[in-house]
Image (cartoon, one colour):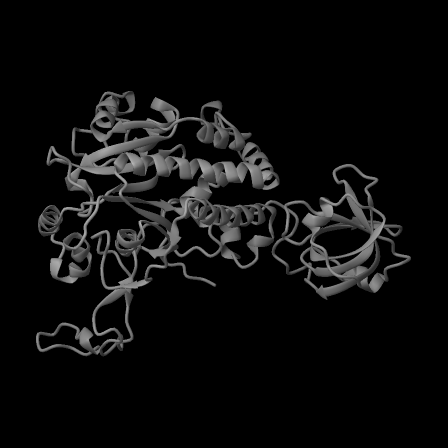
Length: 481
């Protein structure tokens, strides 16, 4: 056999009547005693390549093993296709079965499978059209993230996965320990003696790389992190994972306005990258959504197709309003007055829920919204106090169908204000001396934000559940594979 060529490259080829070798997995096989048509996919593209197998050239024994799910190598001639639906096909001269798949047992037969079923076989679901498309887009978005920051001369910084600090102050963290779970060493007062643990202190999986990212920004000016983060929150919603990926840039000499401008530019760059580089996969996912919504009532159907929605976000300026303005809009809106919100907006100081965020984006402004200047009591200790002493320089970006997709702020660079906030919120300053040192020595105004990578992928792909945009979801009760 000649050297293997990927199907994506072949389908873009301008040459025909050349001998080629392709390898991949059989999606379907149909035919009769005169000819067999095999749809082959190698994961490089959503599109299958048709293999035409003549039983006079390929033995019956081989063709019997060519069933859905089997992995085969095909050598043959690339020709223009006689049938509709594909540009090229291969007239097979030789087929090798690299790995058979028992058609009686292979779970991914050519029919519609539920998302719940596919999550149970997450080790096989990348072979479906839907998940192949999602994971190719996920790759493209990860590449685009690095591209964007590299073009802007940001430095990629790896922040620790194992940490002794809780950046969010949430306390919902996974403990990292080598101590005996049944008989941990104890102090005289009965508490666990972490001095005997591997790190000689209590450690956890990180919830954010932000605090360490700030250290980098206050030396290198512009940095970003892109890594796994962990939340031990017992939440089974379509928007939460226990293990997920975060993109967190931190920039010295940026104020809140600069921060918003960068975040908006970043999101538009990513969406444009998907539109330009993932057209086939987006077209497939768009059609999938249209099919899914066929039987829904008119008022539940999407107003825009997937690519229309992406273009709309990429081409329009985001609406920028303060938290106070948002509360006024929400308090006076019909769903609040008619008690249709699950969480009613009583007044200023209320923490906004996803239903409120989506109302602002989808019903009121009909475009992405950046909310700024939240009450200090519902935000983290590191956010810069505004002059009114009631609000902080926070900013959240809200997207249709998602709610919050980006959260960020100007960071508190003034030592006295930062220590005061930490004391107010019960954050132990003695454990954070390393963080406070950046305010003691050469402090500078700086800002940053976090983008939940899986929430971005939900938006770009149109998938409904966050478990379906990460290869192996980690959720309460589920750590398979």
